[in-house]
Image 1 (spheres, helix red, strand yellow):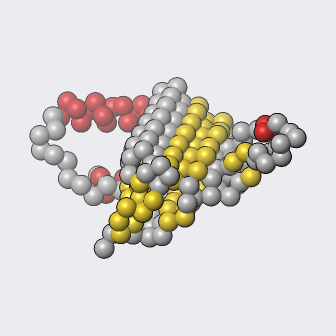
Image 2 (cartoon, rainbow, N blue to C red):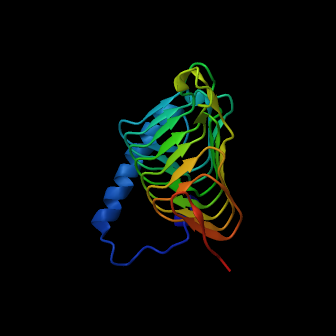
Image 3 (cartoon, rainbow, N blue to C red):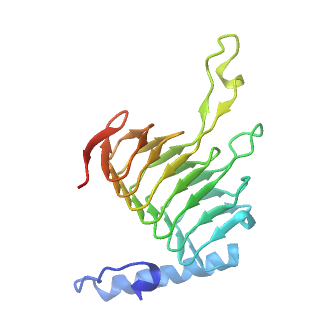
Length: 217
């Protein structure tokens, strides 16, 4: 059963049946809710709102937990791959201002992110396959211009390069990704890091701003 949802672990024999039944019941309710909201096999938690759902491409066995707000108004399709999970109380903002139509989010197969995530996807966010992320992650894919001292910063517009994460990455809790950053494949991002650079494959990064801590041999 687990292999159909992209999981490869064995269930601990000590897990009580009561817990399993509770999870299966809740998943059933989420699936019904997902069919009603999207017409697809998507597990959706209570009080979750998906705006402009016709602009989403949903893979198989997707979970969007409770109290999420997902904005589907973007110039490109929002793609959630197979077995993607978005944690509770998370927000996706694709278009943050009427002066610029946002680009959106692409999230690869078997990638999951924890509760209280903020996807600021106006400039575009790409997350690869098999990326596991903790809670309180934030993505900010655009920057305010500020060099013209004759104008208010809010009137100088924004620039957007986008954010890209590769495959097989572990991201600790409370990491902030800044516009233009790239994280390579097979990498680890330490909890609390502020990532604003371009990093190659097979590294551990951390700090404010993030730097390479060590290579993964």
